[in-house]
Length: 81
Image (cartoon, rainbow, N blue to C red; front, top):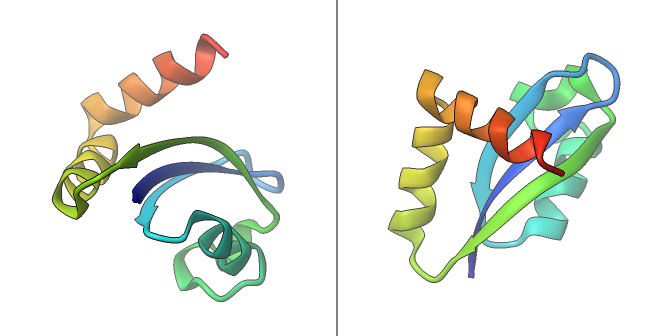
């Protein structure tokens, strides 16, 4: 399975969108400071994820969520939880 995930920084309240094949390990890497783009927002909390059978679908979804329209959709999804 391939995952698209959304993290929230407990330090800055920023959201981060990414994709991976190993979700648990990837979240741990973010929290250990092993990822340059999220190093300064630690600690991170996993807010949401979606699972895909195909890598290309996960990558397309990740790219979409990083657009303005995708960010609006994320906010809608997270506000219902």
